[in-house]
Structure formats: structure tokens, C-alpha cells
Image (cartoon, rainbow, N blue to C red; front, side, top):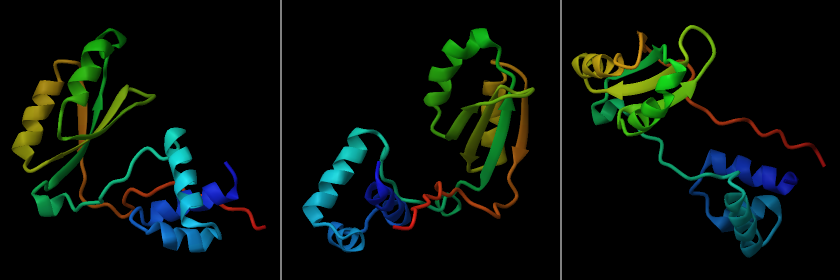
Length: 148
């Protein structure tokens, strides 16, 4: 990956809908050359997809929470397909510490969150923290492009 690829990734992180022509102007390449580079980055799985950032609260998901789960190693084969199939799970990470799984969820109500935690507790002990505010929302990795 060279400096142009790094610049392409940085530009797409800022605005994944930026027209190829505008990107090409910023990296001093033709639009077809930019398109070929982006396709290469996608084939290498450096670019894994494009998405729209939405406001979950405006869609009715008022509750965001992090759930720590003590998951015995023998439960992983059953747990992974279960958690992957849960539409309210935004993220699930295998972590170090007392809780081996850290799960980020969004629900419309605390009652629905409670029902999910009850279902989740069949795998192990849980600890839940409800988010009050998010001073730093999700952001992408900053790509530092060396000066030429």
C-alpha cells in the first residue's frame, strides 16, 4: 500500500460517497486509475464495505448498553452463532479480564434489554452498563500520510 492508497482510504473514510472524479483530482490520477486502485483495496479486504451512519435514537433505539459476559471456553461454539444472529447486537468482542466477551447492544426499551440479558445469561454471568452519553462517537483509524 503506497501513499496514494493511504490517501484513497482517508478520503473514503471521510465520505464514502465522494465521486471518483473528485477523488481523482485530490490524488492526481485519472478516475479509471482511482477505480482500479479502490477495486484492488476491496479485493485485499483493506476496504471491507461502505455504510450509512444513522442516528439510532431517531429510529427508536433509545438504549445503548455494553454487556460483559463470562463465557466458558466450551460455550464458544454455541455462543458465536447465537450472538451473530441477534439483530440488536452492534458489536461483540472477545476481551481479556473477568468478562471474556464485551457486547454492545441497542434496544428501544430497558424491558427489551432486560429480556435479552435474561436470554444471554444462559451462557454465563453478565454485567451491564447503560450508556448515558457518547462524548466521542465511533470514528475511523486516522491514516497519517507522510509528506512527499
